[in-house]
Figure (cartoon, rainbow, N blue to C red):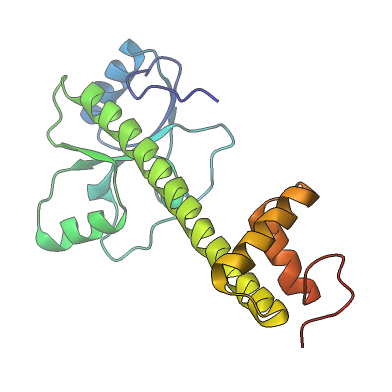
Length: 200
């Protein structure tokens, strides 16, 4: 599947949670120029929009600091926050939202495209890192399974570690399966597949 470029803005959908009419006008005008569709809503309403949303633009100053983020803020949707109040408590709360980008108020006619590109790139990189971590964790789990299977074969057949691993590898090739899958089978049945004697 081809990844969408973070520079590709046209046709994407923005959910805008802004109350100030001047800021709404600036954001709406810029999004329209970029060819984005816009849904306007109320950030205090936790209802998830029915349409697919590519980015959320949130005026963070209209949300009480102690309020808990609604469910949609926690989804894997890039969040661009509009920041006007730069107190430590407000910024700490904003960091908990894990925004992908931000704009400082009062808004100007420039800067939104950059914020969008940064936001889309941020969420894409975060997704890639999460997938890489998942693959690495799977490899660690697989190695543990293979090691446990090797130890079983070493005990069962009185083999050294290289010979036990070699036996598992040859058997995996014979069964046309992976070493990891065969190792899981060895652990599950208590021995090498096709052998009647189980490991004690």
